Image 1 (cartoon, rainbow, N blue to C red):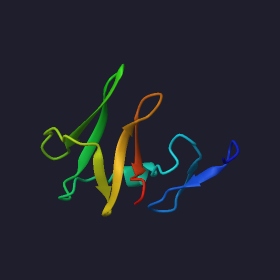
Image 2 (cartoon, rainbow, N blue to C red):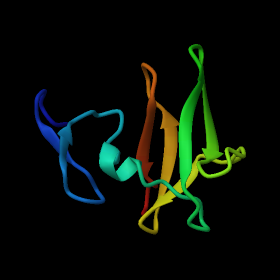
Image 3 (tube, one colour):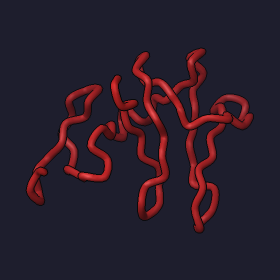
Image 4 (cartoon, rainbow, N blue to C red):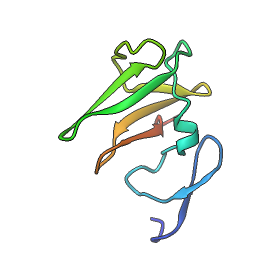
Length: 95
C-alpha cells in the first residue's frame, strides 16, 4: 500500500493524482470529463440525492443512460459513487 501523501498515476493520461486506496484505478478529472457510451455519445454522471445513488444521462439530450459502464478514449471504465459523495471513474478491472 502506498504511504500517505504518495501519488497515483492516471491510467489513461499519466497525470499525477493523490493516492486513494479505495480507488486504485481512478482516472483524473480531465479524463473523467470525456466519458462516453459505447457509441461515442458524451455522458454525465451525477449523485442522485444527498443520501446516495448515481444517475447517468446522455449529455446532449439529457436522456437517462441505464448503466455505469462508460468509455474514455475507447477504454472501458466504470462510474461509481465516491465514499463521501461525488462520482469516481475507474478503468474497468482487467482493462
